Length: 243
Image: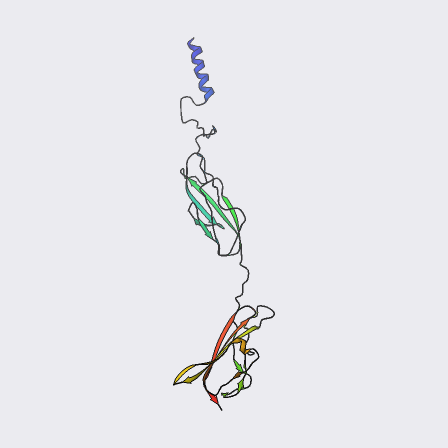
């Protein structure tokens, strides 16, 4: 009878392969035998879709908190852009200053100092901005079409904007599209200069300015607009008059 019991004990030990030792075999939560080996973590990126497209100078964020470790916890996060270490944050922000296809990758390390078995990556497509040209303001030029010298009293003088010009070359039709005038005359009354006549844009269309004999000063202001909607202004003051 003793021999039978002893044989049963030996067979039981051989069948389990562990005897009474608790460190001989380990099982994880899925009942997988790991033979005492630690399980590396798994890197995971959320919040950043693959082939995300942005423009040069723009920023985007990624999140690594979905990374996991089956037998412990994730301790460190290592991000790289195009193979260059960039951040150790769990939720970093990246700014891309060059056009092209870039790769954002994440590896993690767990509490057993094991690196992740995988490297999780996302592709980011960075596009160069469209070429933009800033329109240039035109130049306003006032000319008198019938006089190069002082204004003549009791006569008429025609103010013109024909020498004004557009300064950019954004395309065909670069030109001055409108000229707006304001010509203010002044005279002396009891020793004080006061406004006399004011030639508004409406009165200037195709009409010369009559120089009255009592005028003391004339200020001509011209504003021109080009086909790009850019404007420019200039003023000329006249204080010399002849008979």
